Length: 232
Image (cartoon, rainbow, N blue to C red; front, side, top):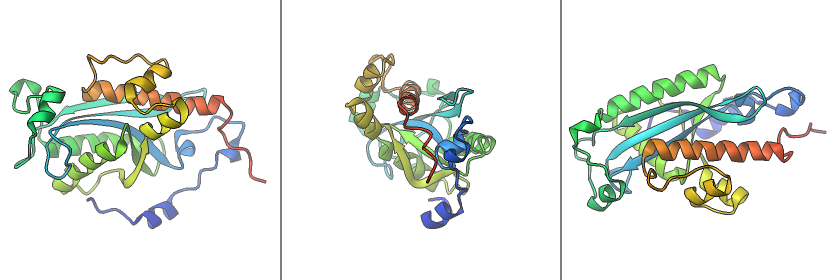
């Protein structure tokens, strides 16, 4: 894992952003999530074990707050990734996602280059949003977070912007707000178009997950759950 402060130290060092302090103004992205910069991520892999199985594809969508104080998609990043040396590749996994890990037409890049390039873009967006740390948003977030952080550890990368264990899981949020945990079904209930034919492509799943997350956050605002009332 990258060198990061302990969770207690990290949390204590974060700026206290209280949206109630500016109740009549449009909250910034940093105010909305206590200084966290949410980045939606999806990975396609050659198995379920983050330590041993190859990470084959990754996409990330950054988010921004618009002039109405609603969350929306910002930038999209997408990489095909070469299996790391000694990586395990489960036949069932690549039959499911349809990826040929060694097809030269994939345009895959080394895992080290992917980690460096993606983290560079995320750090830039985090700084511009005046946030303290990035946090991975994903559907079944433990899986995607585990694979990306395992890649960071393998490559001994020291400047990863993501929190080492905090995630925002859209599966749990969808269960709460929409009564369903399956991405396709949650999107349907949120009136977000979802194509089963395009599913299990990292970039497609990431963009749909980003739309779903924005929908749920914005719906909470529309229902009066945000901003919080001023403290007595």
